[in-house]
Image (tube, protein in one colour):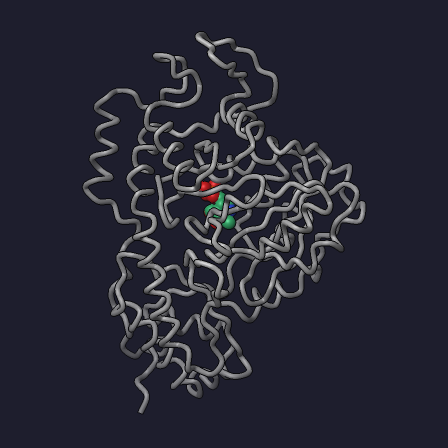
Length: 421
Ligand SMILES: Cc1ncc(COP(=O)(O)O)c(C=O)c1O
């Protein structure tokens, strides 16, 4: 007889929480303490010739990125959101121009477009890898379209060959949102190094973290220079400049990263491949244990990619399992296994695109829709088919993954009780 579900008072499969993330080791602590003890905690202002390009740790962190990504420029930010905003400005977009974005992503992929008074145009995603569907991009292009922002969601690279080919044909900029995909590889190329620029996030839930932080990488000198100005109140930095000019040519913000964060980032970045490898092994182990369950499809990884495994997304079939997805997720939560029913709501359904329009809306309505129904694949995934967990990450082990499998099997075995109960 199946054990009683925790939802109905039975014993939980898992009583202790999943191991805490991120892992902050001695090296991380030492790196931050060293900066504090040096007394130089944000050396963007003119100190010993550093002049707005950041202190030692910032410049080391950026250099590490240029070397690993084999790219000319890296610009550190205080978040990926600020780096995305700077990318929109630095790619030369003008207010009122349109940017193609997926609707299934973190809010700031699209709000970074709004921050420059540009218009996000949502294009649906592929149902297997959850990234922009290249087949649907061309019909969304208008004379005002200037850029595409593919998101390598949950760590899986978007179809960059097709996206770059469309972008080249229509002379569009490509800003890769790699917040969830550090170290991911598409056909032999690291993501972030394929479009005009790539952006990474170091918020504490990410594969590597600095508490808060972001990085923009590019081979384009102009993008790097403008991004640095946006980061630094719009102040101009001249070659060989020896004194502060207080001259602002463009609108800028204070998007600077501190030396403590950069010091933490240097240590974390060195560990990125190793940490990603643990994510890959945990995810593959869990996927293999779930592969035979009729009605669950574990995450897909195309053969020519390295998946960064930021999150573990399962596709769920209510018809085959016989339990509504949201009830299934609730029963798993009661067993001590945290899954989300879907990810974020399709972005265009947020109030910001309807009643709370905080941006210049003189272009709104000219063929742009944020109505329910515009991206049916995203809506179906969100409402019915997607289940998501973030626990397949270090320091978890296969035994933690086994608890997930046990709980899933237990819930399925109790289907009748659950549906009738
Ligand atoms: C896809 C995506 N884009 C952008 C961001 C924004 O990153 P940050 O929190 O560093 O601003 C995130 C992270 O939350 C993200 O997951």
